[in-house]
Image (cartoon, rainbow, N blue to C red; front, side, top):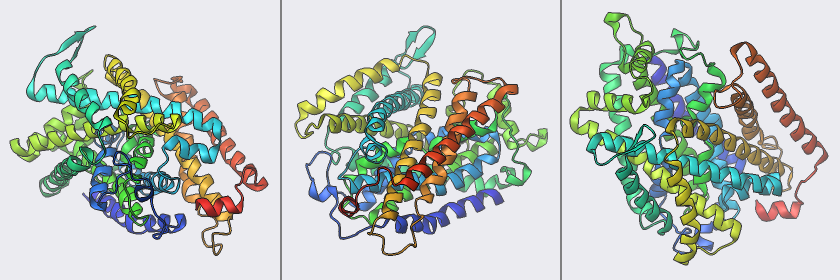
Length: 513
């Protein structure tokens, strides 16, 4: 319990301390009019109340990641708690804040345009492709997961596809909802109902936490029990855990969602509460579920440590979605029948309401590229229909395969977003808009996590089974190559910064900042 309480306090304190520092380094301008006010179109640029935007942002980013990812991450041991806390404060919060605020500063720009403005036109094109691939993969996982859970709750028809039973009726129902949420104005469906689902998701997490602290505190994992790798599948803690937890600490997907809500903010001061704050709330949710999964299966009479009990439970269900089984067992056992059903509904609503905004973000990325006005419904449909077909086709691919490729693509996107934030902050520090040298090195708040995540993603693709799958005795080669890539990025940035190559003029800095 000591580890959990300290981690919880650190997350909250991080918002009020480091989050405030990030806000100051960025330099908010309350008097500057936001795109929601200057580009109001009744479809995507729609002013909304800050509390409503916060709950929508929280629900958008809190899909399967902070719950499923946290459960899979605790298999590696209490080290997962450290990554959730420090990853959220120093990486995820910074990433989400910068992606949202840069979108506001750039007129509601989508993530590929934000990154391309800082890292070049070639990178912009690559990010458009990478973002669309990520969003299609994510929508597929956030369609298949809830459909499977709903099938377990309410049945309905299934389809046998090469030995895999696909809950086709639920897939079609959720898919129909996705179509509406993708095309309708943001305030008609998303802005109206998502705060309710966000409240359910928060209720679920708080309920689980109260039961866990009140009746199972002595069984909770502690970091002083050891930070060694508890995973039994032979995969190393680094970088696997840092990709598995994903949305509970940092997620590139969040960068695609922040511009959706950036188009609804009416004042730059709202940014810290909406973007950094929603990430901290998601970190808290991930912390709760990591602790719950590591606690629930403890059996002191058999001498089973909580995580050892979780490993034993997973071994009894080979080939099944362990995270979904854990959610079902924990919710029903600790919250009772009614509470369990509400909790499961919250878990179902979270990925569904992230999947539809993922498609919406994909539509906006394509629309920005084509420069198509999205007020006419036919133009929205022309862009959305091909996206729908891609997602529906991916439903028939093995969920576990889709999830693994989504996880790496997701974190790779975060790397580019952090590097774009680094460049923007560096340029800001060099401009005459900065009244003193106080925050001249403010770009370090983005560059340090950018370097770390560069190392994570580079080593992951070399070591992971879905990558080059280096044998255990050869993993040092993967770490060496990843280290060289990371050092290369640092040296490249240093050379660029020293020469001033590509720096915008002072007049451009004034106009943008």
